[in-house]
Image 1 (cartoon, helix red, strand yellow):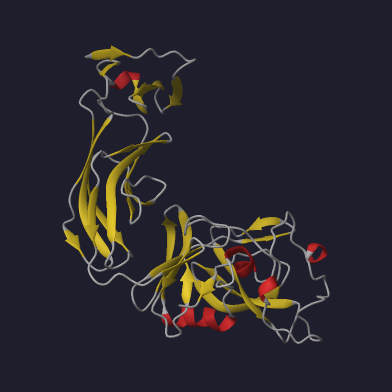
Image 2 (image 1 turned 45 degrees about the vertical axis):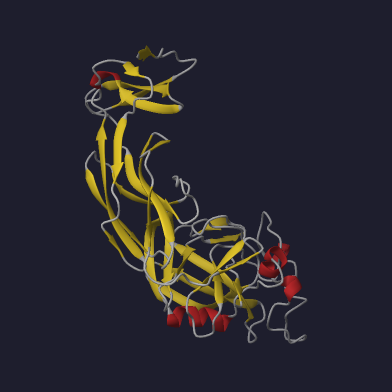
Amino acid sequence: MKKLFSLFFSLLLASIFTTASAQQNIFVWKNGGNLSVISSENVDSVSFSVGSWLFKITTSTAVSVTTNSFKAMASVSLNENVKSLSVSPEVGVCYSDENSQPTYSDSHEVLGSSMTDYTININYIDPGTTYYYRTYVKLLGEVYYDPNVYSITTLGTKPQNKVINGHKFIDLGLPSGLLWAECNVGASTPYADGDYYAWGETQTKSSYSWSTYKWGSSPAKYNSSDGKTTLEASDDVATVKWGKECRMPSRAEFQELYNKCDWTWKSNYNGASGYLVTGPNNQTIFLPASGYRSLGGLGSHGSCGYYWSRSLNASDTDCAYYLDFNSGYVYPSYSNDRYYGRSVRPVAEK
């Protein structure tokens, strides 16, 4: 049964898009709880069946599966009532090893912007793990999904990761056995920046400079007089925020991460830029290029990453060591002033 949807501005949205040749009305209407978007010049009618979709979205079962990847097919086309759209959608696949109904807020890969067939290639996932996936189309902020969800289980043995106080730590197969956190302190996903902390501080603040630094411009702690070269637990934000089993990595542990892992720069990895770090066992962590904070605010965001270690520079106690990277280099042991606000990625023992 067909049902007309009134296009009143008070209830529905009518946006005006200017093209090279003319203006087109883009009508947005409620349809089964979803927003549908269409040009008035490109439809046969503005009368649609209840529950009909603007897009036809299909996903296939996996055509190949390895220990850390899988391949499938996807197809996206317009509903038969729709001739064309005046705006380009985003077509992609969302997937999760935890959510059996994956959404855009889970891991996702962009496939393109055309109404066509696609090959889905998902890489850098865990062995021996079940993943759920489906195709999506995103248009003007609304996301449409294939109603069918598919699942695969990667080959191999599931890694023995660890969860501490709700925080996941990844076993990368490092010689030391050290586990690296999946997220930064203050972040809820591996792709989020998280919070920024001065070295030896455990609270965020609005301004980062020597004048606001907890230990002063001539540091009253961790200096040449007290001989302390490693953060104590009370001054380690990873321990304070996440619990006693967690801590900031040392300078040497950043060096091991650099020496023993493969580092691949990603310019748009689930919406973030940074390094995908693959361990000897093919397990991965992602380090976003979250930049830094100083008196001038947020700097180098999206292009550089700066992650504090817990190690003081004993030869210059105004400074501490940190991981420094951009798309062209990785320095696992750089040193600079302690007052800067930088990211923190915790570690833990097995």
